[in-house]
Amino acid sequence: MDEFGLIRHYFAAAPCAQAATGVALGIGDDCALLDLALGEQLAISTDTLVAGVHFPAACDPYLLGQRGLAVAASDLAAMGATPLAFTLALTLPAATPEWLQGFAGGLNHMAQGCGLALIGGDTTRGPLSLTVTVFGRVPVGQALRRSGAQVGDLLCVGGALGDGAGALPLVLGQRRVAAELAAPLLACYWSPQPQLALGQALRGKATAALDISDGLLADCGHIATASKLALRIELERLPLSPALLALLDKPAAQHCALSGGDDYVLAFTLPAAHLPALQAAGWPIVVIGQALAGSGVQLVDGQGITINPPARGYQHFGSTGD
Ligand code: ADP
Ligand code: MG
Image (cartoon, rainbow, N blue to C red; front, side):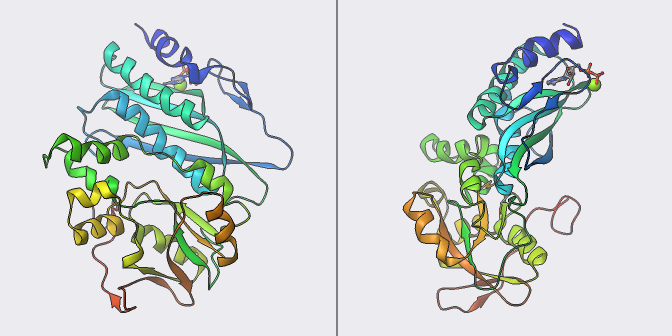
């Protein structure tokens, strides 16, 4: 199959690439065209996943398709944007039908779950990598940025932390455990659920937000810097899943939650007055600390005593990563 046949068969023909609201022109021309309503802004984000760096080259292509789109869509959730469409730039060492079938299946499953239409991309030969660019819409001025946190706001997260990091040694084959212990964590890793609805519910309420991809401490540091204040995190308030606590002791689970990354859960600051209505509406919001005058991220124990945080999150070119 040539390049055009491959694009047609696996991508242009996928259910997620068919006509969709907001897509004036999809795959097949030199550009796709998106419609925006008056008073809306386009939210755009790109993520690249490289084999051997972000995922094992031999992983299940269906799971890779799912995860590749989910991590990109999570950035739309973090901005409070409504999902619209995405493009896919795929570099492949070879066009293997079984691999492409699986990959396109996982991609399509996640795309339909998120409400994202596939509108274009690029297909090239080379070492396996994928780049996903997502597009969302948001009312002018209502995107959730990192810079709006106010002293006194609560620091909140949208669910359990550390599962992705707890799963990583299992994904990499560095650790083997019983299938029933591994399954829930592997599901979190391979099929993160971008908190798109929560992000939209936080518009006009949260003062700052992001999705946790590099670890809670590192990512809260971004809000603290952008908002020019300090964030205090109370260790005992970190939500840890039963699945993670079944695999690791509590200090190790807390370490995953603080520094692990791969959570794709929202972290945000919220004026306390908004909390009761959001919780009453059923949003899974957990308060883990607050915003204070100052700078940086502070970790405190149950008595309010400062603890030295462990190594911060993953950085590709920093002193803690490679
Ligand atoms: P061009 O050379 O004009 O960039 P291409 O030949 O690369 O166009 O692609 C032809 C069409 O197929 C374009 O509309 C492009 O967006 C789309 N496309 C290419 N690769 C993919 C892919 N992996 N997934 C979805 N659409 C793709
Ligand atoms: Mg091209």
